[in-house]
Structure formats: C-alpha cells, structure tokens
Image (cartoon, rainbow, N blue to C red; front, side, top):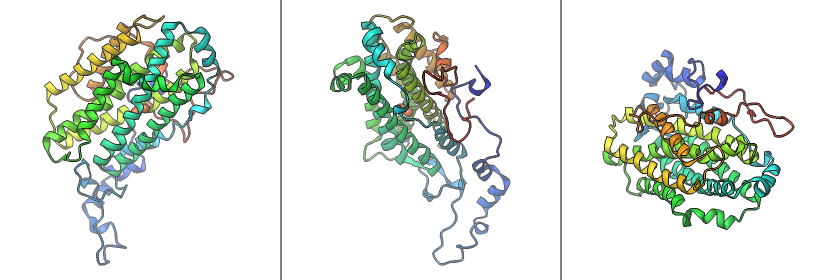
Amino acid sequence: MTAFFDDWDTPVRPRAATTLASRQADSPASTATASRPDAALSATDARPGAQAPVRAADKRIVNGQGDINQLAPFKYPWAWEFFLNANKNHWTPLEISMAQDVHDYHHRLTPAERHVFENVLSYLTTSDILAMRNIGLAVMEKMTAPELQIYQARQVYEEALHTWTYQHCIESLGLDQQEIYNRYRVVPEIHGKIALANRRLERVMRADFDLTDRDNLHEFALSYLFFAAIFEGCWFYNGFTPIFALQRRGLMKGTAEQLQYIMRDEVLHCAFGIRTLRTLIAEENLQLDPAALASLWEEAETAETAYAGYLLREPILGYSAAQHMGQFRYIANRRARQLGLAEPYPGAENLLPWLDEQANLRKEKNFFETRVTEYQTGGALSWE
Ligand SMILES: [Fe+2]
Ligand SMILES: [Fe+2]
C-alpha cells in the first residue's frame, strides 16, 4: 500500500489549517470577528432593518436557530472539505466497458457465481435508493448548518448515480429488469435487510418528529448511526465484496470497477456520517443507550447472516458465507471504534485482508484494457 491510501477508512486527511475554510473557522482573527459582529459588516449594519452577521459559534448540527442560508463563516470546515473531495471523484457508468462482463456472465460464471452476482446486484439496486431517501429526505432537512447540507446534497446525487450504475450493469448484461428489481420483495433474506432499513427511516420521517425532544434526538442519532456506520459502513462493503472476489479471479471486471468508484463515494459517505454523528453527540451532550446500540448491532448481524446464507448457499471459489460474516464483524468493530464506541464483536479477525487493497482504486491497471481508475479532477484526492 502506498502512503496515498494507507487507511481508506479515513479518507479526508486532517490538514494543517491552511484552507480558506479552516482559516475562517479557526483563526484568532475569525474568532475575533465572530465575537464582534459590529466589526464585520460595515456596509450594511447601519441600514434600517439590517440583520446581525451570522456567527459560526451559533451554528449547530441540528436545532440551530441562526440563518441557514449563509455558507461562511464555517463552524464545520471539515464538512466543506468533504464536499471538495467528493467533487474529485467524477465518473459515469458509461465510461467503463462492460463488454467482457457480458461474455463472463454468459460463458464463464458457474451457476453459483451467477446466483451471487445477481443477488448482490438486486440488493444494491434497492439499497442505494434507500440511502438516497435517507440523506435527502430524513437527514438533510434536519441539519442546521449549510456546509453540512451542501455535502449531503452531493451525496444525494451520488446515490442516484450509483442507482444509474446498477441499472447500466443490468441493461448491459441483458438481465430481466423486473425480476432483478423485484427480487428484494420476494426473497426474505434480501427483504430482511431492506425492511430493517425502512423501519429506521420511517421512524425519523414522521411529520411530528421534533428534535428538541430528547427521545426523538436519540432516535435520530441511532438512525443516522445505522445508515452511516452499518448500512453504508458495513453492508455496502459486504455487498461489494463478493464481486471483488470475482474480480480477483479475472471475472466481471467491468462491474467490479464500477463498484470501486461507488466504494470511493461510500467511504466518504460513511466517514462524513460518523464525523457528523460524533459532533452531534458532543454538541447535544447525548448519551447513546448501550442496550439500544447492542440491539442495533444484533439486528444488523442477524439480517446479514441470513443474507449471506442465501447469497452463498454454495461457496464460490475464494469466498464463503463464513468469510462474509467474519468480515462484517471485523468492519463493524472498526466503525464502532471510529464512533468512539465499544467494539460489538471483540476479537473479530480480518478474514479478507485483500479487501482494503481491492477497494483501493490506486492499483496497477492495464491502460489498454480499461480506463485508468485513478481518474480524478481538481487535483489529488486526500486519502489517508
Ligand atoms: Fe451509494
Ligand atoms: Fe452512500
């Protein structure tokens, strides 16, 4: 591994306070300005009806009372950095050749491998729509700092792009769309994961959901934790990993490359969600109920176990249900540590050590076989 990507779970490198955002939020000068609003707006403060300047210190993750339509001064400069980084991972599914995948799917995959491939795709198609609805409809409207909402607006687009990517794979391979898309409704082991996520989402989308109520705030924090740390932070990796296992054997490489681009977005989504959640918990002096957390992990593990059992009824070469679940527990521990919480599965081992490397887009590519996946715009991505 290179220094570029030593830790793909902490994709936004903490920077020295040299960016505009950092300077505005952290410098003594900005603090002074924030504490002396009368010095900040000489052109307008004398006019009748002029509003006091927005102060960074007044911003909050939720329940803020200030003007939400003004980006700077930043209170959460790291959120702006996430937005800038997200904009360096531009691609569309049309740019990646699927020609070899059509051949592989019809002529090289075994029936067990086709079963895995199709069901992974089937699960993912529905998952990304849920992820989009969660951020766009349940989370974004509750945020009261624009720098958070702006990254989340980008995330909403990226989830839509991911859905387009799956649709492109389904179309390219000539799969029966109706059957693939409806599979989560008829296969209980896929439906279990979707239903669990839907329940979390519905609880925080009620019209009477008021975050000044402490119980609701706790419910929202758990839901956000579920989507960022489990749904995106664990389940997507487990969703992608069987395809990466095929890719390692030279199969379905176009699809796998599409998923590598998606993985790059998801790394940011997960990291952003965890950072936001940690900040929310500190800001609101919130204590997450250990029993509620334990049941969150337990529900997720139960649903994932059923899913893995269905997906890998027969293990495929290099990948089994036991490995899938081992990796779930190992990644779940990592997410808990990132959240400052106790590990739910102490002692879980990294059964698929190649995953971090496989997920990393920076690897040797044959230029004539595929487009270079290190593609980015606007300068180098900051991955740790
Ligand atoms: Fe996604
Ligand atoms: Fe996501």
